[in-house]
Length: 327
Image (cartoon, rainbow, N blue to C red; front, side, top):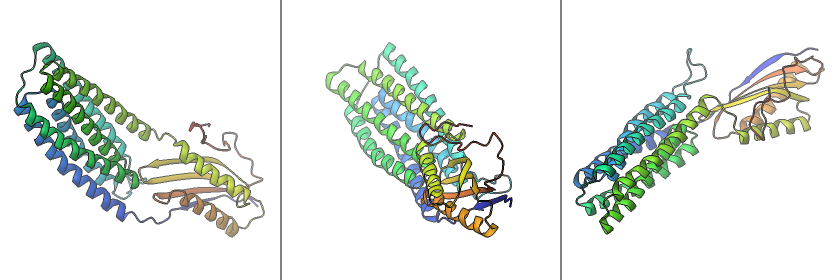
């Protein structure tokens, strides 16, 4: 008996708590971004420090990027529609790339201003007050950044993780500025101020490239080797237990907290439709349980063992060790 069946398995997943946590975290990020911008610009105007200016410019960019991230988080949560049957989650990767591009522009401007100040010579004043303001803001950013990254990873929200990493970069930027301007305050060596600004700009540029790299990997749906290994292990176990004879054409991809898994399950020829469906459902449930914090959709295509498979149908499509595509 030839049996060809496409079976879609879309388990119900409670995402209300995740959405609420994400909105709370993004609201906190937007509020703090405004505080950072006002505080750092104030510190720059009273000190004239190029290093503090570099920190303030990074916060200007961060405010715009955070607003974009907030919109992306809302848009990604919209349900699938006729034009977007797989949902809207990929906007998270666009948001990450956009944030990286904005940070890159800020880094280039900081490098230009730092070089100019190094050539012309800085004029500094009231450094003690500026250092106190910068230190307070850096401490706030430390707690906010850790909170955003933790919440983003727990709820599988790339937007929050990227935003949290940006906040932590802002914190390290402020810390670098504190050290540099503190040395100027203690030693009276004024050229240290633009040098610190240049170093800050280079560090920000490194973060920008990392964020854009993350966006590229997500948009190109690069394979996650760790997740591939878990899926392959579950399917091999299903073979050992006799639920399926074999499998091939395995594909899987992730967009934030949504996981899609596709596979062809090979069944014995003499199975009834009901029994083949029952076995496929058991395997799909196991695959679903691998990603308990995610929304998982498994699509299986059932084939009898006697069916002659096309040559292009590889045993598995994903290499769990290297994450490279085999066919």
